[in-house]
Image (cartoon, rainbow, N blue to C red; front, side):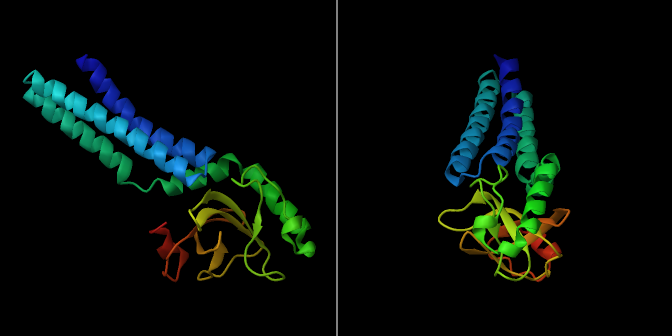
Length: 206
């Protein structure tokens, strides 16, 4: 039983990050995200407590201390780093061709200046893209990846020309900002209170 508990603790904490990545790539539903997220964290915590209790019950003091250190390191590796940039850039690189297709469609339909003319895409959690800002004006579209409750969210914005660094946009009825440039005119955007005047400064809070 002891070796299995050690394996379970490592697997459970690694599973936390696997679920984090899977949900980013597959789902934008905030409620499901929270349920799954707390679920895998709960499993990892229970596995850690079980291993610690097992070693204590057998009076294996050194192994119990090692279990605490191991769980601490795994937990720190899970929560200390900001995984969002890695997932954001990874998703874009994985679907780069689709993003390029969406941008090309938006550019060709620009004269229509209407949400109806915007391209549909499986990249969006709603299946559709949205205009960013007023129309006519700067050609920019938004592909939602996460929907906040009741408002806000996060996703990818495409701009025909580089956007001003301090520009604010509306994302699902909430103020939104650019956080990172991911390539070819695409940016990761999030809603929220990011008063920093530059994208580089805002990126630290995204």
